[in-house]
Length: 309
Image (tube, rainbow, N blue to C red; front, side):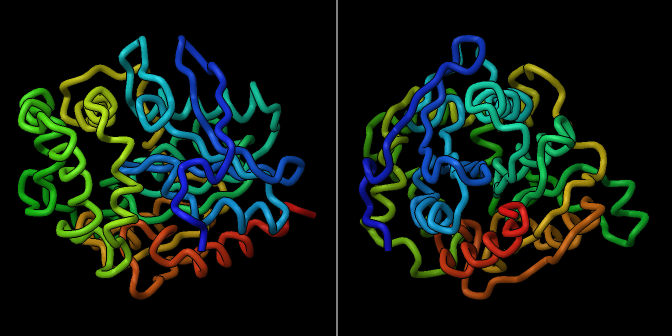
C-alpha cells in the first residue's frame, strides 16, 4: 500500500489555458498515456493507490488536479465547469505532453469530464473507464428503454450538500469559518455521509484527503461546478453530454454508494454504444479507485492492455 505522503509522486506544473496552471503527477513516461480525472471532494491524491501500479504495468500515468483544486491554480476567468475542465486536460495531455491518443479514467465529476472529452475529442480518447458518477442527461433515451427519471436533487436526502454548494456557496463558506470546519465538511463525504463503504477511510486517510480543502479559496472554487449546475455560475462552454459516446468503455460500479442514484449502472450502460459492464465491485462505494484499489487496478490494466501493443 502506498504511504499517505503528498510528495510520494513528483509534482509537475504547466500553464494550460487562460492563465490556469495545473499541477499533476506524471509517472511511467514513455508508455501509453492514461489520464486519471478526479472528482469532488477529491484531488489527485485519490489516485495514490493507482498511479504506481498503472505505471508499473507500462502506462504513462497523468494525474492532474483540476483547476481550482489541490495544487492547481484558481481560474482567473472564473470558470469551473465541465467544459473548462475538459479543455484544460486536453491542453495538458495533447498540447503540452504531445499525446495524440489517450486512455481516460474518471468517476464523480471526473466521470462527467470523461464523457465530455469522449464527445468533444472522440478521435483522441482511445478507451475509457467510467465509474460512480451521474449519468449524462439522456432522459428521452432512458425513458425509451424503461428507466424512469431520478428524483431531483432537492428531493434526495443524501444530496443536501449539492443544494447548499450549488445554491448558497457563500453562505456555506461563511459557516465553515475555520480550517477544522472546512475539513470536517469535506471529511463527512468520506465517512458519515456514506459515500464510501464502511471502513475504507480511517482518520489518517481522511486527514490526507481533506488537507487541500483547508484553503477556503480552494474549497469555494471546488463548488463552482455545482453552482453551474444550479444556474448560479456561467459556463465557459456548453458541456458535451447530450449524445451517446462511441468510445469503448469499461463501466464499473461500487454499489455501497449512497450519493449516486442506484440507476447509474443501467443508465450509464445505455449512454455508451460500446460498453463492457457494468461490473459491480462488492464492498466498495463512491471512491472505488481507493476502496477496492487492487481490483480496480487489475480491471483498468486489463481493459487498456491492448493499447500497449
